[in-house]
Length: 169
Image 1 (cartoon, helix red, strand yellow):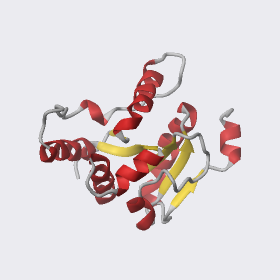
Image 2 (spheres, rainbow, N blue to C red):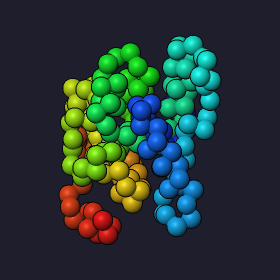
Image 3 (cartoon, rainbow, N blue to C red):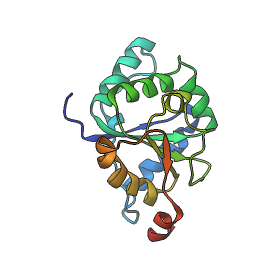
């Protein structure tokens, strides 16, 4: 596999405002949050054919070393339907064996199976659920993603409250 050096953010189109908020966190000099956005690569036009868009999504994901999945009920539905672009992204993430940090848009700090797409639950894929806050997402990307390859774990996980407390959350 090619060298992967980016963070891919996957989300239902209805949750794009949360993705835009993540971009604002990244661009704010007063917030210690950064990610190297795989969406900057291989831009697809809205008028592209579905197969072209899927091919471009795959190319973006080839350059990713980790994924942040914005967890919402809509995201679960679309990521589970087998036909949406988000379902395609989930399928490719599993194929590429990428670490997935599920950022719960409802603010929950535990595993919320109502926002995780079924293929990740059904396949018992090792994910880490965190609340949608820049500090804990950054912590997860810095700590969970690098340890993913040596995991030996399966299924969804979450950080205990002491991790949040140590981060001032």
